[in-house]
Length: 81
Image (cartoon, rainbow, N blue to C red; front, side, top):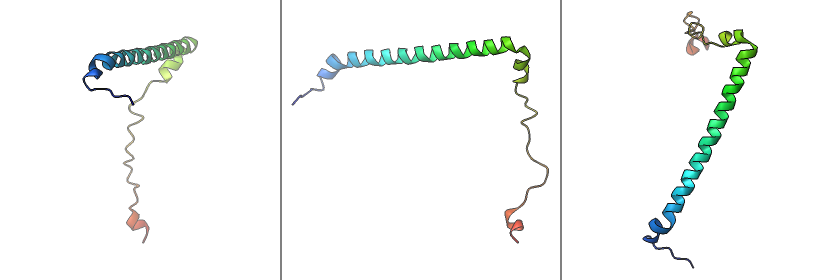
C-alpha cells in the first residue's frame, strides 16, 4: 500500500504536474496556431484564384434584417376553430 502524505505533494508531485500542464498547454497552442495558419493560407489562395469571390462572401446586414412583419401570422387558437 502506498501512502502519500499531503505535505509531500507540493514538494514532490506539484512541480511535475505544473510542468506537464504547461507542456500540454504549449502543445495545444501550437496545434491551434498551425491550424489557423493553414486556414489563413487556404483563404489567401482562394482570394488569389478568385478576387471577386471575396466581395461576394461579404455579409449584407440588410439581407438578414427580415423580421417577417408582413402580418401573415396565424394564431394557433384561431386556426383550430
